[in-house]
View 1: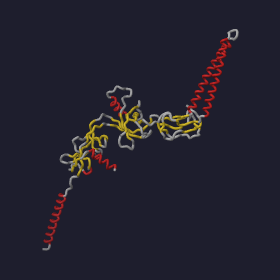
View 2: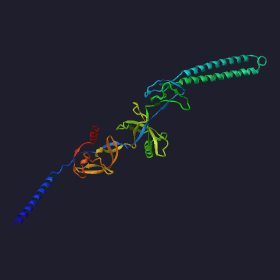
View 3: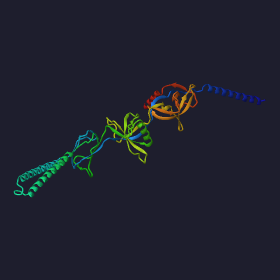
Length: 395
């Protein structure tokens, strides 16, 4: 009699627990989370062209080592280290006194030679007026002719020595051979400077031209052939191979390729060891910002401009080695579309394959989306989203 009420109590308890579980499940179903809010936009259509980028260094158009042509003691320095100089500006002065003395001595030797020549000419003239064979012999006359010629040669030699002495005196004043920026002085006043055209001469300073400046880089053989075909299309010019291609450049601390230039030289051989060929572009440098030896990145157009689709980088997801974007249809369901990426243009990523111009792409909120899930889209433009993202990163 006592076991029956106990069994009935257990049955009632199990029925109550089952009812509570059903009520809880219904409450959870009723409180399902809403669709995540995302920002969507149409791909941007722009006229873009393929381009390649290379790293290189700036080199000066003119690089000059200032060395003396005559030896002597350094007397004056007429510039400040690192200043801009123009062609013809005075730089160094070597003690002029020994060279001035040599010039004076050479001038005196010229005067002496000219006096000897005048005497020889007068002596010969007197001899020619005498009767040959009776008053003067032919041998004596020939000797006077020879003396005149020797005196003329001596005058020519002494004048040449005077010109050399004058040049040596001029060489004591060293001027800038080109315009540009001079480096620091390598020798102080009072030191002996070794000059000349052979042997070990003393380096006094260096000068590099500033404006314009050149940028040297190397390209691979395939790229060279591609540029050559693109540049030579419709041109019969075989002298420069049509490689006068416009380029853009940026420095290592810049985000945009804001500096415009043009390729003006491509080497005549391809390096066997690397399979690359050397090229050079020229850029204007009025402010002197570009410095020889400075690194930079150059961009070269590899094809004619064509229409392309672009999306922000924030709209691109990664699945192992594949890239994808989420396209939202009329039913607000996010569907992944695998795409092929191109270069970045004006902060947007070029999509070369996998995307349709009419697709609506999620450009913000990608991490809240799952494939096949519904979303709450909010319309925006891809450019505005990119600008906003860049502002947030800057701040």
